[in-house]
Length: 183
Image 1 (cartoon, rainbow, N blue to C red):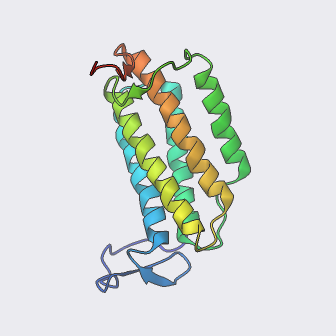
Image 2: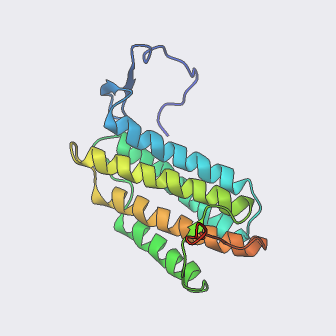
């Protein structure tokens, strides 16, 4: 596993810079740092989601996703590194189809909520969407493999579907948006 951190602070970032995985120094406000930092944040929100009660199959799936997000963060931190593959995106699509098949079609928008696990899943979904936007912004100026962006796009879709599943499993149900409430 390479070098292990024995000392957490180094003081090298006190000037507003940070080291990438390839040793290059960049500003802490660079697009690359924002992208992999938000992937890290998304991973943390999934950790918070995992602290809620949920079916074992979803827990196992989300734990796998956490490992893949860690890999994706590494890919974004090391320019030119590849960690997420087409097969990872395809597996997310298979899970999306699996969980979505048992849900009724949406006729209305749903609001984030539907119980604790579902609400946490919605938070994770929105953070993943932000990670996707930041990765797209990075890809406009530096090389980012398309698999990374596709993975984040499918993951946010999967989290939306899982939030629906979790809302139903909790007994709370989905919270529908009442678009005619002002009439």
